[in-house]
Amino acid sequence: MSRKIIFFDIDGTIIIEDTHIIPKSTVKAIKRARANGHLAFINTGRTFFNVTENIREIGFDGYVCGCGTYIHYKGETLLAKSLDHETCIEIIKKLRECEIEAVFESWDGVFFDQTKPARGELAQLKDQFGLQGFDVTKSWDDPDIVFDKFVVWSNEDSDFETFYSYITKDFDYIDRGNRFGEVVPKGYSKATGIKFLQEYFSIPLEDCYAIGDSSNDLSMLEYVPNSIAMGNSTPFLFDLVSFTTHNIEDDGIEYALAYYKII
Image 1 (cartoon, helix red, strand yellow):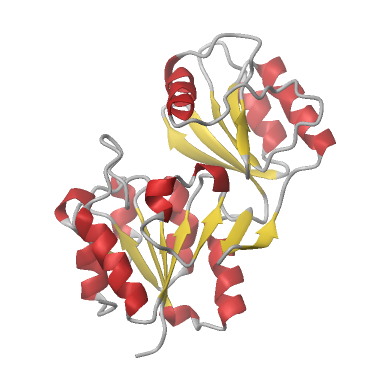
Image 2 (image 1 turned 120 degrees about the vertical axis):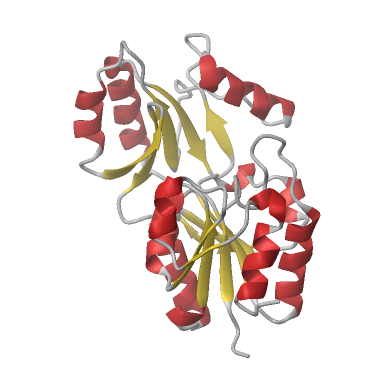
C-alpha cells in the first residue's frame, strides 16, 4: 500500500465542540493509521500555541496551523508567515475605526483589545484561554505587536462593509456565520498547507486525504480528491465532498479511515 497523508481539522472533527472531549476511537484510529506507515497531520485555523496538549498526545507527525501560515514537522518549523508590524498597526486602526471586535493570533500567543471589556463570544474565548493557562494580558497596543491571522466579530454598531472592503484587498475573509469571520493573508490556506507538505514528501495528490466539518475547511476539502466531511458538518459541505462519515461522537474518524482502508 502506498503511503497516505491525512489532514485532520480539530474542532468538530477530532474534538467534540460542546464537551471538548476527544473520542477514544479517534485516538485509536489515528495511532493505527500511523502504525500502518501513513502520515497524520493536524490542519487547523488555530495557531500553533493553541494546539493543546491533549491533541499533541494523540501523536501526529506534524501540524499545519493558522490556516496554512505555520507548518511544523517533527520538532522543526518548515514555514512561518507573520504580518509585518506596520501592517498589524494599520489593521488595528481600521478595526477601531469600524468598531469591529477581534482577537489577533500569533504562532505563540493571542492579543486582545484591553481598552474595553470583552463581551459575548469574545469574553467566552478570553476566559477559555485564561483557564487553559494562556497569557490573555497581551494587548493590541503592545509596542512590538506582530500576528499571523485574526478573527473578528461585528455587531449592530460596526461599519462592516468598510472594513470588509479594506481587508479583502490583501486578505481572505472566511465567513463563519453569526457575524463571525476568520481573516487570513492571501496565498495562505489549509489547502496551501497540504500542497506544501505534499511536495515536501513527494506524495501524489491522490494519496492525500482531508477531514473537516466547517466553512474554514472548504479550501482543503476542495483541494484533495479524497475529501471527507464529518456527519456533524455544516450541511453545505455534504454536496462538495467525496465521502461523508459518521458524526464525531459516533466514531466518525475511525469509520472514515476504515472506509478508505487506511486502517
